[in-house]
Length: 181
Image: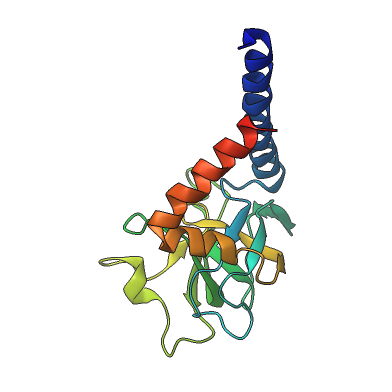
Protein backbone atom coordinates (compact mmCIF):
# COMPACT_ATOMS: atom_id res chain seq x y z
CA UNK A 1 0.00 0.00 0.00
CA UNK A 2 1.16 3.42 -0.84
CA UNK A 3 0.16 5.70 2.05
CA UNK A 4 0.96 8.85 0.11
CA UNK A 5 -1.41 7.84 -2.73
CA UNK A 6 -4.17 6.96 -0.23
CA UNK A 7 -3.80 10.31 1.56
CA UNK A 8 -3.97 12.22 -1.73
CA UNK A 9 -7.13 10.30 -2.63
CA UNK A 10 -8.66 11.08 0.78
CA UNK A 11 -7.82 14.77 0.39
CA UNK A 12 -9.44 14.78 -3.05
CA UNK A 13 -12.62 13.21 -1.67
CA UNK A 14 -12.72 15.75 1.18
CA UNK A 15 -12.16 18.63 -1.24
CA UNK A 16 -15.08 17.50 -3.41
CA UNK A 17 -17.43 17.41 -0.40
CA UNK A 18 -16.15 20.68 1.06
CA UNK A 19 -16.39 22.34 -2.37
CA UNK A 20 -20.02 21.26 -2.71
CA UNK A 21 -20.73 22.50 0.82
CA UNK A 22 -19.11 25.88 0.09
CA UNK A 23 -20.97 26.21 -3.23
CA UNK A 24 -24.30 25.52 -1.45
CA UNK A 25 -23.55 28.13 1.22
CA UNK A 26 -22.40 30.70 -1.35
CA UNK A 27 -25.58 30.20 -3.37
CA UNK A 28 -27.61 30.57 -0.16
CA UNK A 29 -25.77 33.78 0.66
CA UNK A 30 -26.34 35.23 -2.81
CA UNK A 31 -30.04 34.28 -2.78
CA UNK A 32 -30.51 35.23 0.90
CA UNK A 33 -32.08 31.91 1.82
CA UNK A 34 -30.91 28.88 3.82
CA UNK A 35 -32.29 26.60 1.12
CA UNK A 36 -31.64 28.05 -2.36
CA UNK A 37 -32.69 24.87 -4.18
CA UNK A 38 -35.56 22.54 -3.33
CA UNK A 39 -37.35 19.61 -4.95
CA UNK A 40 -41.14 19.36 -5.36
CA UNK A 41 -42.25 16.18 -3.58
CA UNK A 42 -46.03 16.31 -3.93
CA UNK A 43 -48.63 17.09 -6.57
CA UNK A 44 -50.19 20.04 -4.73
CA UNK A 45 -48.84 22.58 -7.25
CA UNK A 46 -49.83 20.75 -10.44
CA UNK A 47 -49.99 21.81 -13.24
CA UNK A 48 -47.47 24.61 -12.45
CA UNK A 49 -44.91 22.18 -10.99
CA UNK A 50 -44.77 18.41 -11.15
CA UNK A 51 -43.33 16.05 -8.61
CA UNK A 52 -39.55 15.93 -9.06
CA UNK A 53 -39.10 19.47 -10.41
CA UNK A 54 -36.11 21.35 -8.98
CA UNK A 55 -36.94 24.90 -7.85
CA UNK A 56 -34.47 27.75 -7.50
CA UNK A 57 -35.35 30.31 -4.82
CA UNK A 58 -34.48 33.95 -4.36
CA UNK A 59 -35.25 36.06 -1.30
CA UNK A 60 -33.46 39.38 -1.73
CA UNK A 61 -35.09 42.50 -0.37
CA UNK A 62 -36.74 44.85 -2.84
CA UNK A 63 -37.38 48.55 -2.39
CA UNK A 64 -40.98 49.47 -1.69
CA UNK A 65 -41.58 53.25 -1.97
CA UNK A 66 -40.65 54.30 1.56
CA UNK A 67 -39.93 50.92 3.18
CA UNK A 68 -37.30 48.24 2.68
CA UNK A 69 -39.30 45.00 2.74
CA UNK A 70 -39.16 41.45 1.50
CA UNK A 71 -42.14 41.62 -0.80
CA UNK A 72 -44.11 38.68 -2.08
CA UNK A 73 -47.06 39.54 -4.29
CA UNK A 74 -50.34 37.72 -4.81
CA UNK A 75 -49.63 35.09 -7.45
CA UNK A 76 -45.98 34.54 -6.47
CA UNK A 77 -44.99 30.97 -5.68
CA UNK A 78 -43.18 30.79 -2.35
CA UNK A 79 -41.47 28.07 -0.38
CA UNK A 80 -42.14 28.19 3.34
CA UNK A 81 -41.04 26.21 6.34
CA UNK A 82 -43.06 25.74 9.50
CA UNK A 83 -41.99 24.74 13.00
CA UNK A 84 -44.22 21.67 13.03
CA UNK A 85 -43.05 20.37 9.61
CA UNK A 86 -39.75 18.88 8.54
CA UNK A 87 -40.16 19.43 4.79
CA UNK A 88 -40.67 22.87 3.16
CA UNK A 89 -43.95 23.54 1.34
CA UNK A 90 -44.25 25.07 -2.14
CA UNK A 91 -47.50 27.01 -2.66
CA UNK A 92 -48.89 30.13 -4.32
CA UNK A 93 -49.68 33.38 -2.47
CA UNK A 94 -53.44 34.01 -2.69
CA UNK A 95 -53.69 36.93 -0.28
CA UNK A 96 -51.26 39.47 1.21
CA UNK A 97 -51.62 41.71 4.25
CA UNK A 98 -49.34 44.46 5.52
CA UNK A 99 -49.41 45.83 9.03
CA UNK A 100 -47.68 49.22 9.39
CA UNK A 101 -44.78 49.58 11.80
CA UNK A 102 -45.09 51.49 15.07
CA UNK A 103 -44.02 55.13 14.49
CA UNK A 104 -43.93 55.85 18.23
CA UNK A 105 -41.24 53.21 18.71
CA UNK A 106 -39.40 54.51 15.63
CA UNK A 107 -39.97 51.24 13.83
CA UNK A 108 -40.99 52.31 10.36
CA UNK A 109 -40.96 48.80 8.94
CA UNK A 110 -44.31 47.24 8.24
CA UNK A 111 -44.79 43.49 8.43
CA UNK A 112 -46.12 41.41 5.59
CA UNK A 113 -48.33 38.37 6.14
CA UNK A 114 -49.36 35.87 3.48
CA UNK A 115 -52.09 33.34 2.87
CA UNK A 116 -51.10 30.49 0.53
CA UNK A 117 -52.74 27.64 -1.34
CA UNK A 118 -51.55 24.83 -3.58
CA UNK A 119 -52.85 25.16 -7.16
CA UNK A 120 -54.15 21.58 -7.03
CA UNK A 121 -55.71 21.95 -3.55
CA UNK A 122 -59.33 22.87 -2.86
CA UNK A 123 -58.72 25.05 0.21
CA UNK A 124 -56.10 27.48 1.54
CA UNK A 125 -53.24 26.41 3.84
CA UNK A 126 -54.43 27.75 7.21
CA UNK A 127 -54.79 24.18 8.51
CA UNK A 128 -51.10 23.57 7.71
CA UNK A 129 -49.82 26.65 9.55
CA UNK A 130 -50.44 25.30 13.03
CA UNK A 131 -52.68 26.00 15.96
CA UNK A 132 -54.02 29.57 16.05
CA UNK A 133 -51.90 30.73 13.11
CA UNK A 134 -53.82 32.24 10.21
CA UNK A 135 -51.03 33.72 8.08
CA UNK A 136 -47.36 33.28 7.23
CA UNK A 137 -44.92 35.93 8.44
CA UNK A 138 -42.58 36.71 5.53
CA UNK A 139 -39.65 37.54 7.78
CA UNK A 140 -39.89 34.28 9.73
CA UNK A 141 -41.58 31.58 7.63
CA UNK A 142 -40.74 32.25 3.98
CA UNK A 143 -37.58 30.62 2.60
CA UNK A 144 -37.85 32.29 -0.80
CA UNK A 145 -39.78 32.98 -3.95
CA UNK A 146 -39.46 30.57 -6.87
CA UNK A 147 -37.58 32.29 -9.72
CA UNK A 148 -37.11 29.38 -12.13
CA UNK A 149 -37.18 25.58 -12.21
CA UNK A 150 -35.83 22.53 -14.01
CA UNK A 151 -38.46 19.86 -14.73
CA UNK A 152 -38.09 16.30 -13.36
CA UNK A 153 -34.36 16.59 -12.57
CA UNK A 154 -34.94 16.11 -8.84
CA UNK A 155 -36.82 12.84 -9.16
CA UNK A 156 -33.67 10.88 -8.28
CA UNK A 157 -33.65 12.63 -4.89
CA UNK A 158 -37.25 11.61 -4.24
CA UNK A 159 -36.59 8.03 -5.29
CA UNK A 160 -33.51 7.75 -3.07
CA UNK A 161 -35.38 9.15 -0.05
CA UNK A 162 -38.40 6.90 -0.58
CA UNK A 163 -36.28 3.72 -0.86
CA UNK A 164 -34.04 3.44 2.24
CA UNK A 165 -32.39 0.22 1.04
CA UNK A 166 -31.38 1.81 -2.24
CA UNK A 167 -30.18 4.88 -0.33
CA UNK A 168 -27.54 2.78 1.45
CA UNK A 169 -26.51 1.08 -1.80
CA UNK A 170 -26.31 4.46 -3.57
CA UNK A 171 -24.05 6.02 -0.93
CA UNK A 172 -21.87 2.90 -0.74
CA UNK A 173 -21.51 3.04 -4.54
CA UNK A 174 -20.45 6.69 -4.39
CA UNK A 175 -17.80 5.87 -1.79
CA UNK A 176 -16.52 2.91 -3.80
CA UNK A 177 -16.37 4.97 -7.00
CA UNK A 178 -14.34 7.63 -5.23
CA UNK A 179 -11.92 5.04 -3.88
CA UNK A 180 -11.35 3.25 -7.20
CA UNK A 181 -10.83 6.10 -9.63
